[in-house]
Image (tube, rainbow, N blue to C red; front, side, top):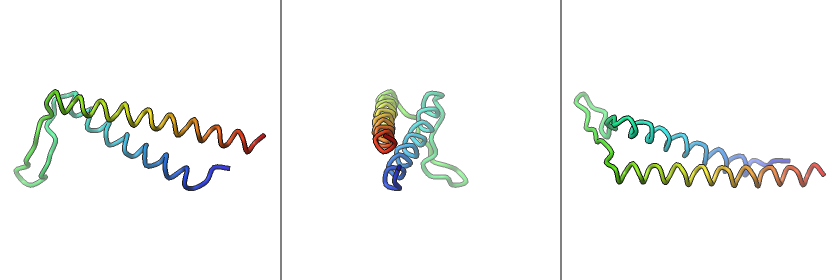
Length: 81
């Protein structure tokens, strides 16, 4: 049986990956990211170095998610047998 701790870990990785993908999509479109959402917002456009950092984080999170899913499946398979 899958326990709550395992689900929480996967949920946290998915949440982080979703946020990183939001940043990546905005950066890929060269859209400014709002830092201070006031009437006249303060924004920043990600440079190439920051885009690379975002891409690396997305890859890291995808790998982390895949590893956790594999472990989850292995745990479930052991308990089914």
